[in-house]
Figure 1 (tube, rainbow, N blue to C red):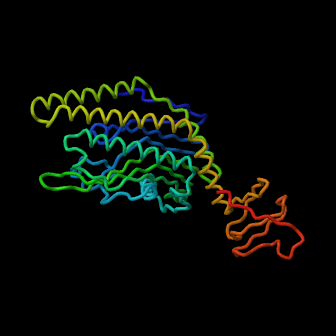
Figure 2 (spheres, rainbow, N blue to C red):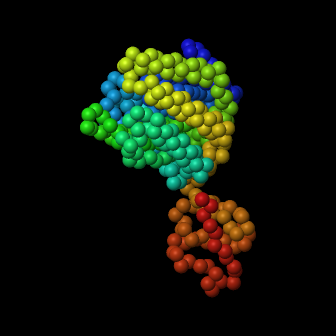
Figure 3 (cartoon, helix red, strand yellow):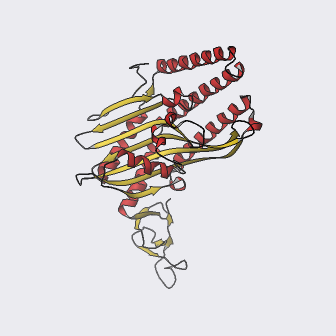
Length: 360
């Protein structure tokens, strides 16, 4: 596996990309293989970072501190939402910054429908595989209770003030899956365990707002070109099979409880990794619509406007704070607005106005 080609990506002119694989979760059978890509464009001071999937666990999971992921070791109870996680990630990316100012937040309910649907698809797939794993284990699903399972996603925009006083504009997005489960722990005891799966974490950076949109668009284009190397996936499968064989040997030696259980659990891990890979490939091929929508919302927030549409389809940007009741003439040449729910400019007027609708 040393220096193996994991994937290919088309590098746009001016960019320098570096990729690596984090096998820690995979080696501990706690998660999946995590691919990470970092890129920068020195001429325009653009940068981006992306990773596929990373798992975290509650402090009550019984795992020794030294075996937890480095990001988890210094935290008591890590995250409750995707927004919390993204804010923490940004601080770790700029540990020596003078300040990290949150400029905008798009939580799950405000994100484009395509991004929410992807979060829900991950939730359904991971929950289904966890239930199958319980059903196939010797302890059985009757010995464990799923207390809660939810999908989340977020996008945040920040202004980073560096040590030298220079300011950078920074955007971060991620999908988030949270699973709460109660399961046996020792004799006559149970333990509540919380698991976080962070998927498709992406951040990008620029020296100003205009170039931030450019960095996001170019990062999306490069991510959409990713192709996984089949030989690498075969090597991962071979490692998994070797792990199954080692478990089987331990079973025969009486160290592990049941050979069939070991094979089923290992097979479930393999299927889970394959399904995640399939969804990731699909997401890589269709990221432009989500990125365009996040960019549009970012642009509207920066410009301080809301888009309204007239009956003939004309879209007009109305300054935020002008009022929620917006009316226009048929050609949208005259716009009137008010915060009053009863506002109607047609009353007492010889000019006909039509009410406009908020576009999103």
